[in-house]
Length: 124
Image (cartoon, rainbow, N blue to C red; front, side):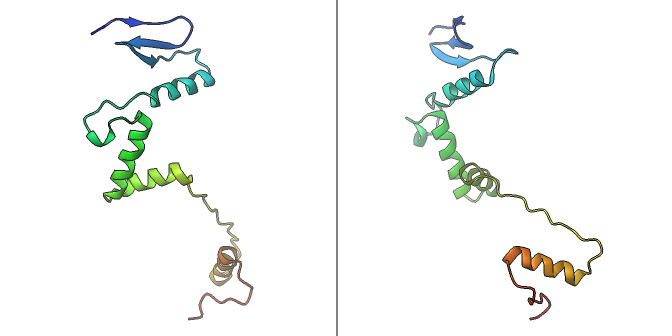
């Protein structure tokens, strides 16, 4: 096995044991970082999980995250959905400090459902 590490001068990469790996530096541009990430995630998975053989690192990571989510890991499910669907938009309530609780709840009801002014949240 070749233990030699080579640094080609034309790119911010190193060749370690015949594999191309990105190397960072203070002068690395955003485009170079993106290229390095693409290079790394396209490397083939060489781990122990036989289900992931033949996949790239990115494919293996996505499958692994999906398996963890399917096995009941709520954090894994949240991370997986955030990557696929994007993070949910955060809603910010505009508080009127002079409003009564009923007026505040009425406003929340209207903003959440587009309901008319005649909706009473206290009605059952």
